Length: 103
Picture 1 (cartoon, helix red, strand yellow):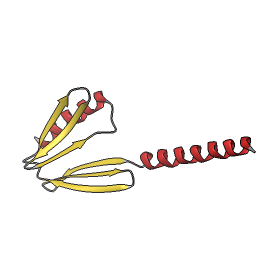
Picture 2 (cartoon, one colour; picture 1 turned 135 degrees about the horizontal axis):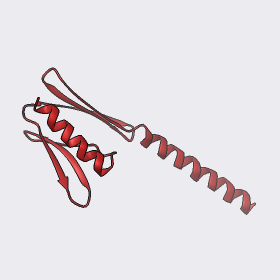
Picture 3 (cartoon, one colour; picture 1 turned 90 degrees about the vertical axis):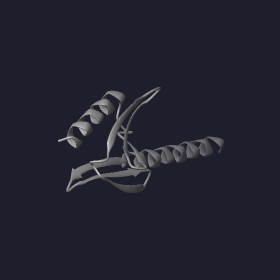
Picture 4 (cartoon, one colour; picture 1 turned 180 degrees about the horizontal axis):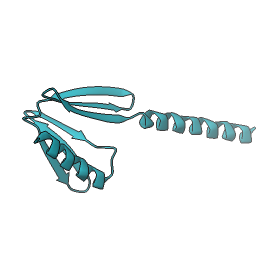
């Protein structure tokens, strides 16, 4: 009987891990620049949010500390992007965003 309970508990934990993984696997960020707007859509943990920024006011900031962060700042808004990327890719993302915003 104890073996069956332990086995069932193992399956429940495994199922919970798959649900948690599936929720994170659906996370994404979408960055679009066009029509005088910089749109950033972030889906994380089953929730999504969309941000609209004026590209003329956006500053791309690369913060290097314990973790490399790519942050967009405009007026009173601050938005971190590239959170699912490794440090090197965040650095490349910051450079590419800066380049495209200044074209």
